Length: 342
Image (cartoon, rainbow, N blue to C red; front, side):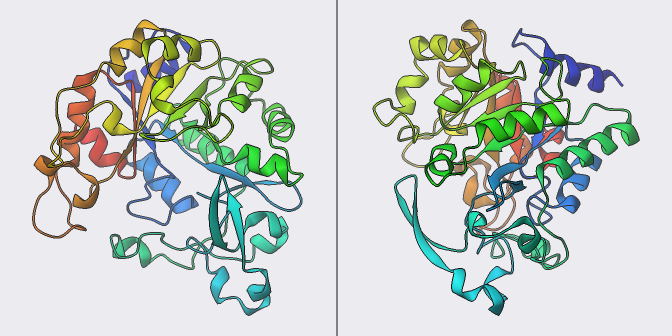
């Protein structure tokens, strides 16, 4: 009950300091079940996650569905479906040529005939045993999962939707913002007290949403490059003390890639924490880092165990290091392991 109260306050109160970091289940417990599935979300809740994350893209008929990208060849069985073979194509998404099948070329009814699969089977063969069992979820179905879990557990299970490629979707006649605000209104999630954190790598959509809704917003920040809608402004510039002050005008959270908080040296070992957490807190922003994964391939050198890249290292210890660095929330594919480190 105490953690449930802390979780709710963390989402609602403007002060950045939390008793311990929130655990955000990155696409659910996606290290153990295919990502963005009911099984992944429900397992994450069982493991103690405070928040579950859906990535949102649009269908041809304008429905928000829960996929990591609008290209779905790697996360569904669409490539095995002869009736959809002619829809394989190449598109440029945020400047990157991408070949596959895209949600915007399918209606929701068509997508619902597909079944999900593990995106990283070489690293997660156990999760891959659940391939072919579940359909693609819509955003409102994910919200329903969170609400049912809240009622079942007595904890506030929040949702952290990420709007994927909004400039791209606007460019093909599927603008996200009006549709998303309407969806939040329909689901009664527009208020400052809504158990929601809305994320995006782009800046403009968050700035405009801040003028329309009171729901907390999180600016995602990559370790390199620039937002797709602001190519003249680098992510590095955005996380300077001055950049964070500007960010706080529209966002409640900054969401940096994890090595921006705990950098790594040339040998891949963790070094001294950066100034980012302190600067963000000084600007009034909470900090959520992404993404902790248990496999050696994704851990710093000092946390790896065994020889294989797919073997699990000391992810719990890595989570503890981020907690010590002062972050307010942690995205992880393995919520139980992240929680064990706190």
